[in-house]
Amino acid sequence: MRIGLTGGIGSGKSTVSALLADHGAVVVDADRVAREVVAPGTPGLTAVVSAFGERVLTADGALDRPALAGIVFADPEARRTLDGIVHPLVRARARELEAAAPPGSVVVHDVPLLAETGQATSYDLVLVVEADVEVRVARLVQRGLTADDARARMAAQASDEQRRAIADVVLDNSGTPEELARQVDTFWAERVAPALG
Ligand code: ADP
Image (cartoon, rainbow, N blue to C red; front, side):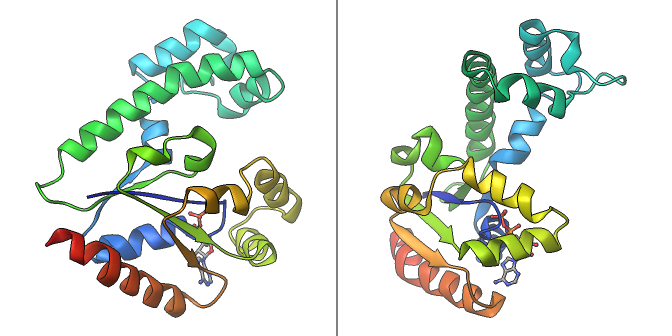
């Protein structure tokens, strides 16, 4: 079974991933895969440098993310070029990781931008995590972001309504970690376990 997991920044995706892993799911973290495919020495990094030049490299030859972000932020064409390089590599690597999971595994793809990239139909089930905006800002500030930065990142993402439109199940993480864990238990019992037969 393939589950797509998404939610806005600070909603609790990583937390839900960990809870699902406790139930035995294999988690594929799209952000982590996206970093891997452009790590030093990869064909992905070579392709990005061919497209954007050495200015997107740090002194020690790694991808200079802020420099790259600066280039693609204001230039939709550059953004499409970058996505055209990175997205296929991410999809291929995610498929590889999924293929390596034991047969019959529940594979959870943690994809922050699932609503934005239109991949929702490729999963058996889409799980969306939500939390009130102010709760998310407070949690992100605790994690070291400024409130302004947290809000700017949220504004650049899909809205709760857009994520709800692709959701099969919505979890509300505005409460305590215990309340979230109970929702994940119920989700597993009602939507995952029966499908495993
Ligand atoms: P995401 O992966 O969606 O950005 P995280 O799972 O990393 O979100 O959660 C954001 C922050 O909020 C983390 O520091 C996490 O530990 C914390 N957090 C998540 N859920 C709760 C909760 N129910 N109560 C308090 N803190 C939480």
